Amino acid sequence: MAITLGALVASSSPAAADSGTGRVTHWAPSGIVSDQYESHPAFDPLTGDLYFVRSTPQFRGWRILYSHCTPSGWSSPQDAPFAGDGVEADPWFSPDGRSVWFISNRTTDGVHREDLDIWRVERGADGHWGQPVRLPSPINSTGYEWFPRLAPDGWLYFGSDRPGGFGKTDIWRARTDGQGGWTVENAGPALNGPNDEYEALPSPNGQRLILMAENGAGDVRTLYESHKTGNGWSPRRALGPDVNATGSEIGALFSPTGKTLMFARDLHGNESGEFFVWRGGLSAASAAEEAWPAACPAPQH
Image (cartoon, rainbow, N blue to C red; front, side, top):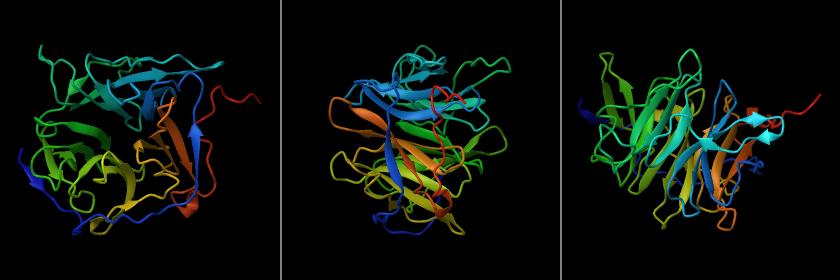
């Protein structure tokens, strides 16, 4: 399949103005936080289990773990049921809970891969996870793929350092061609610039997109937002300083309603990577804070 270049909105460079209000709180439940680096949360829509990435304090050696809520709190995290060898990260559940997308360099056909590719695993009717499947070319390339996230309109957004982008690593998107293959295109200059863009997260209603990008000032990661318009995605704008507090914000996750955002932040100390929740800042309609993530254990009535 040919990779086509599709500019969604004509824009010479991403905007960098702050936007957003609301309240950011530290989400640090016992059993989940550790002296390691926790990031990239994903809640199982069918079981409520929390899947996330744990790595060293230096953000290396990524593994996908999961924990379930018990009467005494979150259980001790275990390897994901579909875990393989090598590095694995960026889990994301389909809204119906029947599939998980993630990245991995696990051994394939007896070959241990150096680059990270996009994988998907399906859950059977019995509730057990099947065998993970590596997505085909042109979604996966000889480069690195990151953070696969499926939008409601069928486009799969992901990061890749493949040739043909606007910078080093760009946001790309793919969709099925109706014949068992995939068509891939660059997500355009409204989202991409001359530096690195890794993570694009469409909102549950498909009208907003949260983007993680490095701004070129060393290893500084910033969360941006873009909105869908009649001509495609609007030029990205940085979220406010309450969200972008340390230049290490990554792994965003919308609540099912799209009113609340969870992400990880490096506290640059003994706590390393930790989870934070942004409430009431996504729109005027979300000013009333929702109870997400759900408390564990659940309150007794």
